[in-house]
Image 1 (cartoon, helix red, strand yellow):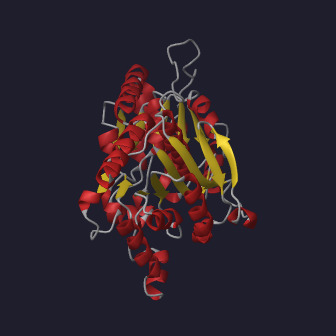
Image 2: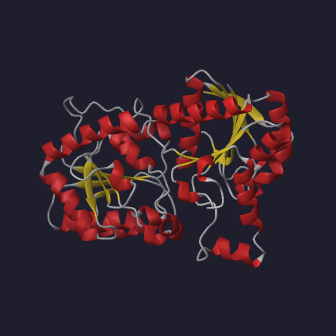
Image 3: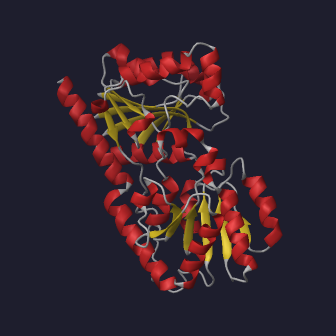
Length: 390
């Protein structure tokens, strides 16, 4: 197939979860023999008006990359150049990564009579408590109407959880498909001498948004340090709560390391330094997650598992269906920092059991949650759409 994948405002290559997702899907589809062209941006702050006339095109891995550098909130002004690109490429199908102010790919598909998939990774219509929703309501709901219109124009909607999509969209047009991990890139041989840290190292990977629970991870770590445990805590990434996390961790100087932003290719070597991984999500900080369920496909959890790390995370679906308590890691009640610390302590005190959990986690993610599996399933969805059209 000839596939045009529109990810307006997503930096590719990049360090964000959306960047990894776009890169791995494009790479995976190309590896399956398809011709893939990706529309993205060079970096999140990029703004180059010239790219609205002519995208900056290059090869990236096995696919072609076309940078249109406009802010995400202005993504729809790229509709004319994406239409020209689509006419030139003659795709069999167009995939668009949903964003409130995007939709140029779906419009191009409709204008050219090409089948389309809308890839949805967040709640389409925010709950009333969210500021963006309140502003939209004051204006009469234009963003909500445009979001629903994109859903209706798409032949299929692919999403980790069907509740992200408005209920008036037929369930038969929605395909639930989780994200994954690059199980080859994150393969770590922990059987070799020196592959396991001399003292337990607990890792947190993420963009430090409030709902990622980084502050809870620091508090749990501090509690263990005060108990006199010889352990270290490695925080990978950057984001809104990083500065607060660093300030909080200063109370336990020498026990916490913060790397800041790191390239995606460097993440596996950092995870290799760890023996335990935490994903202490806090849905109270994200009203949409409370309204629709935990729809964010947990990239960090899949990557932890691919790196053969036992995972400590909260006991809510679908996290407790990915990481099964006592099998691939340990679960604890959301928001209970004491329970988080106890779970980490248990894994520190039972290293052989922790190692076995990590090995089972790698086997599980390889079998069910790899990017390869994701792309295989996405390919089936595209073939189904094209068979109907033909």
